[in-house]
Amino acid sequence: MNTAPTFEDDIVDQQFADAAAADRQTAVLSSQQWHGTPLQPFTIRRETLYFRLRALNDSLPIHLVRKHPESFLQEAIILLWLCLHTPEDWNPMRGNAALLMEQIESWADQHLTRADQMPAIELALQILSSADSTRAIPRPSDLQGEDLGN
Amino acid sequence: MVLLSRAAPGLFTYDQILHHVPLAVGRELIHAGRTADGEPLIWPDPALSKRGRWFSRITDFFKKRRR
Image (cartoon, rainbow over all chains, first blue to last red; front, side, top):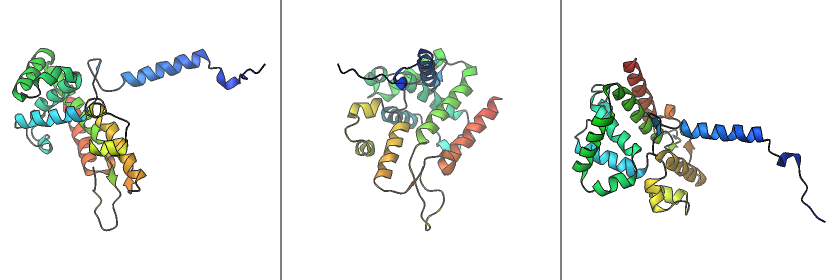
């Protein structure tokens, strides 16, 4: 009778499997979180809404954030709200940006304390920079400058 | 959206690209697609671009303010 041979490599040590599962779980949980709640991915739709709401608020250009750090708080709140909520939460309000903004502000009033402001700004910057970190950078030719791409 | 659809044909639906694929992952796939097409690109690293360095500086600025 033909039976498949059992190789030593096929036998997975239970302890090893458990450790690997724990590692995977840690990797998932170490992604961006807000007070222990993992954030939803920063997707194209979230980015679009973020820019739309930013425009609605007449936000300062992002390069002025160092001169007026407090101005970035509003944007950080928008980003956090978007990444903590699902499309089902905002889809009914997508056509009415003012109503959506009102909803975000009332969420911030209820959930964000003064001590949360700086961590919120840091997390928002982390979200923006990690979304940007994998943008392709063209290799500069001899004729072009150093700061191309990204 | 179009670049990602081209980079990974048939991998994601329209809805998945809009609502589920993180921008960072989408950009990784676009980078891979462009590389596969033979375009000379540098491996993405924030330290290699003006924009990436700006983000690092601004993040450090807020970290210092917090201390």
